[in-house]
Length: 442
Ligand code: PLP
Image (cartoon, rainbow, N blue to C red; front, side, top):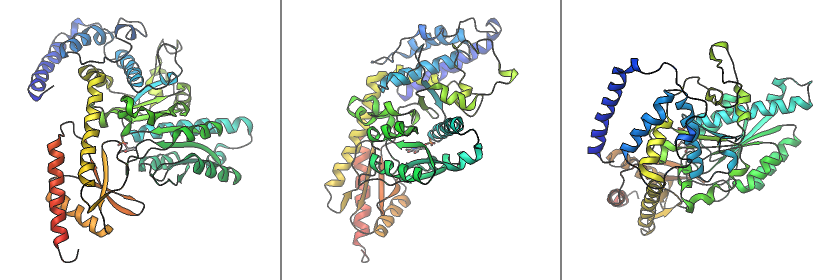
């Protein structure tokens, strides 16, 4: 959709909402549908090819309006998470379907998804220990619980540990900044010998500093054997798994208890839309269920209705699956794959420019849309270069530290980035580099 069409559709949407308000009195107060009504009205998978905006709007009237804000809001979310799960080729156990034990939910952010998984794992672990040691107090068990994550994990994982009141140990990474099975295994064994209770591991697929991928095919079996919850945080990289050529990076997800990525980061859906799947919905619901009288409803015990309030911290929720439905249909799976491929291609273009300039080095394998690079030389030199880049206000780079070295990160983020932007950015960086290296101190 170009800007002109966006303007036109925006105006049409205001009219649609105004018509709705004007005719509200003619609409029923209660939705006249049975639980599960929506699934049968739409396809079981996202379309491959783009569909028209008109077709989607017709379906809003046909599919959403009979179920008003709820149950349509809940049911569309479950089906959209199934669509997305199928795009990612998630194992069947994560797909809700009509009979599944797992399923997906939209959280606001990856931080929230990690926290939810940690709290659910904590609850499960406490119950499990209590079952064989009823004399122990919850506080005593809590003080022994230990969680693990990579030393490259996002700060939100450590924060989840702080909020959840559990110990979080950082697992050292290998030369490519990934956690491998042997290191985790060793730490878990040491901790068990010291009387601690390992209960949770948060793996990262696509770390924030360098987009590294933990070896989940090795880590998953260790977690399963040790009865530890494995959560996978793929906040950024997860979107790319809709492309068959990147899907292998998700191999091992079958061992995970929960998996999350931010569809709002790289899948063209506006903020906020953090997609999270759990293998066993009972694990997450069991941890947070509250049933006050004012929230009871007649379908509660039927098993036909998903109450997402048990899957998240807030009670109220927005109708965020509408955004998914529109985007998936407007682009089609092929359109979304083309978007990812284009951005990875642009990152590769930037990588080639860096590699062709002997003054620079690439600091981590370029797999997706992130290029970690630096000037060969001191950290101070690179810090000065970044300061000048920032001061000139043409491009925005965020640094990281890799193996003690100050590294610049070039990330392709915007939907509208084109090759000429990459070339322009590189010209700018090399111009500033030229000026910097001309100075006597360097
Ligand atoms: N995890 C990873 C790997 C990230 O890269 C980020 C953000 O960049 C986060 C978690 C935090 O994401 P959010 O802002 O959705 O909480």
